Length: 248
Ligand SMILES: C[S@@+](CC[C@H](N)C(=O)[O-])C[C@H]1O[C@@H](n2cnc3c(N)ncnc32)[C@H](O)[C@@H]1O
Image (cartoon, rainbow, N blue to C red; front, side, top):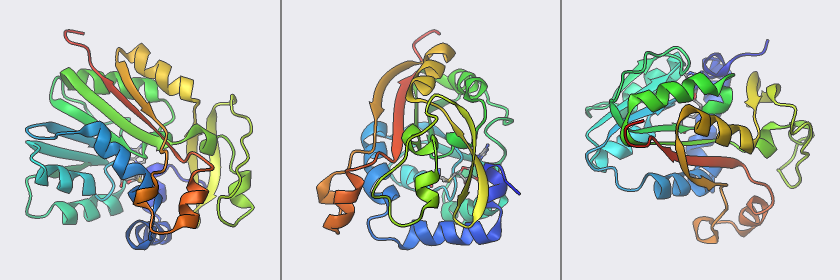
């Protein structure tokens, strides 16, 4: 049966596969494509109060605390992830709470930075979430997130054909909504939106958008040339950096 994001990561077989992929893969997309761009976008974290939506193992939180952020709070709907996140943050001031991104009670004017890495494509309606994030930020507070690129979420036929991602089929691009996909040994529902949908949802919530990025690979970050060549072909992730205007 198809599962939502948190249920999917609470499927123990899926969870084991996910952790193995994240931790033991050379030139993993997270290390080569996602982290370098997030590092560029977030910049100096000194003194910031940070909220992380869909925090997973909270590795971002551990690093942010090492880099001088004032506080870190991670939210995740998966029990497995919360246990892992608590282990990652042991001995630090970082905290995690088990809650969904949709239902969590967002406090007003608390955070300087809200981050969400590869979690919002599991959320059916991002508009109320973006409104909640806006009011949880201080003036000029930033909202930075990554999602699976809409080219990827549009259609998974190429993925189901197997093999490495040498080519990709983009189909039903403007038919937004749920996509049932078989991935990492489980069935999960992801939500496809266009690039424009993400941009407009940010604008309509009251954000100013200052950067859009697309996981362009950098050769120096790859140990394997053929992986670099492959990653130049298809965009895997999309990033937005937006901020709450003063006195909004
Ligand atoms: C691909 S993992 C990314 C984890 C982490 N952000 C990272 O980059 O390592 C997606 C995470 O989002 C969480 N998630 C998905 N949908 C969620 C929702 N609606 N509410 C809370 N957490 C959710 C999952 O449980 C999972 O931990």
